[in-house]
Image (cartoon, rainbow, N blue to C red):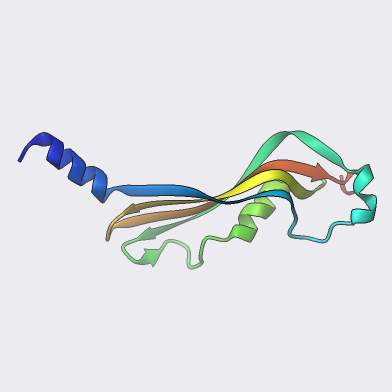
Length: 119
């Protein structure tokens, strides 16, 4: 069998994909006092929060699903006083080696809205 056919079969067997689930203007998982919005600061750089699970054959390493809420909270909590994410996106990433291994992730990126009173 020619080498390129073997290469194509290997690449087909090791499949991965990612897609943007949504882009957002503001996203929060906890209560935010919108009346005080004018006093909040915005970080200059975007942050990233990720929640990943690994599955071997059909058994997850951790007995839970990949959690979008956890990924959002990791991004917000990466900045002291953070209350929400602004101008960002949510992406789902899957990497699969059929019948052997899977990695499933939610990735959230955005700038953090900071409440100075919570620092």
